[in-house]
Image 1 (spheres, rainbow, N blue to C red):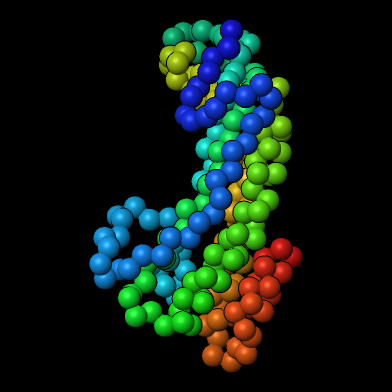
Image 2 (spheres, rainbow, N blue to C red):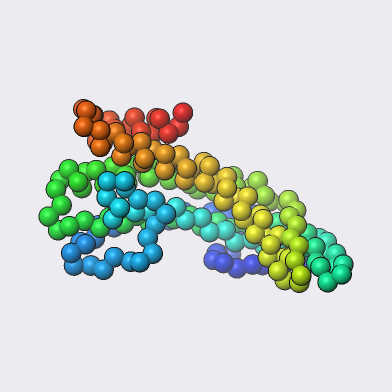
Length: 204
């Protein structure tokens, strides 16, 4: 019995489907637009009004292979039959109307860093899906439905952890290194050279 758990997705005959949304940096005028209360997970150290978020949205179809009920406690084992992953990288800059060229260039540097790592997002997302495809995961709870959800959550968490290790965390390290370089008063590097150095340091 196949039990689709729909979060988002599309119909595809392949066992692993990946949809990658292109990175597009939105520049907002902080003077005339209202900044959202919910911001991205990451932001520029020099300008917290520039923020971004790496999205990883999995959808799994699973087969329940085993269920044990004992003393009103359910243990459910599921096998992953199909994986769909959507990735996105919303990036927003909230700048004053009279922002200097140097400020804009600095924020664009973060875009370039994120784009560098996000280029590999589809490839890594597919690897994450293939890693759990065909494997079994267990969930335990007081009712069958919750136990099923926990089993699926375990599979999703394993994928997300790997994606963060390969894409999100290196990008975050590079952005932090970039900010450190650019705020160092003794720094003589251009934005492009600082980006290159920060990416190199993050990948060591």
